[in-house]
Image (cartoon, rainbow, N blue to C red; front, side, top):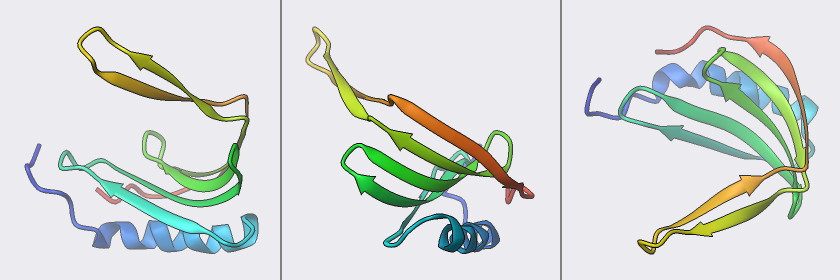
Length: 108
């Protein structure tokens, strides 16, 4: 494990492919989010929020190297407050539809 955030450049081909897929699969407007961690893991996704509780996305599934389409609805949050004062907000989903679009070569 390193103590540095990995470079973004190796992700560019995957993110570009996701953006192209999103143009065909998701209505506009779209948002692209990339998160990088210093252990070499990352999340990447292109999203369209249909409403406050409905979302379509194209995302990279790092455990399988798949680019997947998702439709999530009925979401909300369950909030738990612990005796030490810490609060945890966990997302909930009423309905989820997922399909694999393609598999790509992992960047790292």
